[in-house]
Length: 210
Image (cartoon, rainbow, N blue to C red; front, side):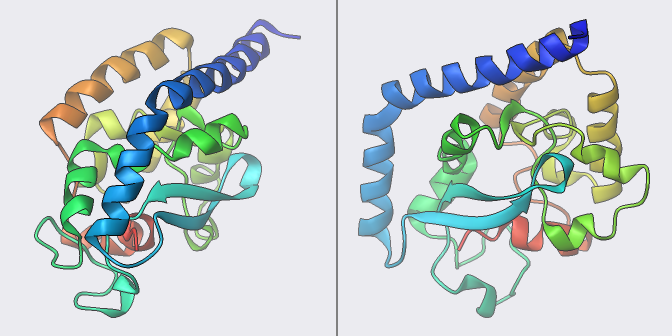
């Protein structure tokens, strides 16, 4: 087994082990959030959607629901912004703090995702990838990644793909540590939570957590 493959194997084992530990520790918080969502609005607790993972393998991603049911057929449809009335009171808080991403611990434990990697995308987007962009699928998708700490949703989709491919081609454990450190700063500053309107065709179904 090559050194790089050993590192990737360690990355996967580390992700799963840490996810189990974190899930055990924050299980009371997950319960509180679940109750808050149910009290705040009607509808399911979780937003579940099919995404494309490593080597085009399909999987279902989990998030806490942050919008009213059937949101895609209400108001501005697929486009969302900070003041979108379809976002619930609890959902607005979850989005600002990125707590809506916590259920993805399940995806990491199942080996479908990693803590660090390109954000998981939708099939219709992957079908439009060219030879360069498809490299984005050479690693497990992540909860956060190089694109997320370099603009998040405020940068264009082509720019995000370039950043994701750069990450894959230059991956190292030390780069992951750098991304984790910068992720905390991005979350606390609430940078790039909502994208530019011209990018909504890329962001639409990815961020419409209904």
